[in-house]
Image (cartoon, rainbow, N blue to C red; front, top):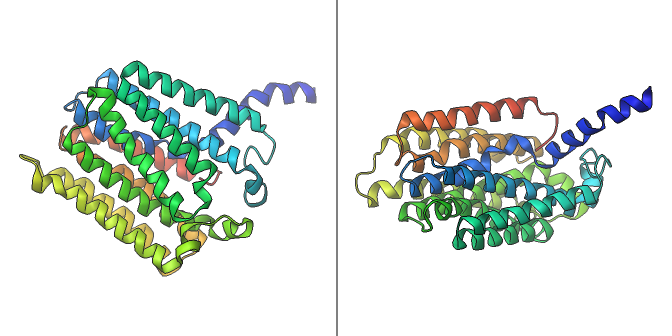
Length: 319
């Protein structure tokens, strides 16, 4: 009877382990990073190419999360022993093979859409691999590499939809990259003690705590500055979405980072991570708002916010 129960629940155990590997509460990140470029390039039309761009971006993002745990299973066995690989709920091969297959399918899908999209997918896979295998433990290099990849998702969205990159998408790329740089630095604090125990060098350890927090603040400020450039440089750009979404994004980022700046410790780093999630979901739509109505933007953003809130509050795992 016991053997039967273990066999019956084994598939669910594997599914749960994979969900933990992909950090499912963070699912909104590739969506809100890809949508600005895709919707700007499509002039606000939610075409099948926009959907394809988002699905490919999400798949590649999740594959990168799996590879992250694969490359860092030894240190996780010390700092995060409950994760799927250190706890032996999944074998390294069960992580490596699916992630590699997903990467391959993303590359094939990119080339099926157009040459430029396919080439960029190869570049994104390379960035993901470099970050997970090498740069994550190299301080500022890691904090720079991953945000560039996230920012390029907007470029990827535009290439999938139209094969070219409108000028407004380059603003989105710059703002998203800088915002994610600020976010990445602050969220490294959530593991700062554990990382130092196993010799992982993060930006706060490399540059110092206060210089790192200053760099994060400057990067975030520049991101919101770039956010406003289209209003000053482009014709007929409505300021309303910038006030609504940008204002709420600033509020979410600032309020949740204040405790970290006052007391740079792991608990406050994790709180800053959650705030950055909400800030990114509110921040990226500023560019979408230049193309589609406030009402349509709400239909996209509010469900992402609510689902993210529920997942972050209910998931037992640390993301």
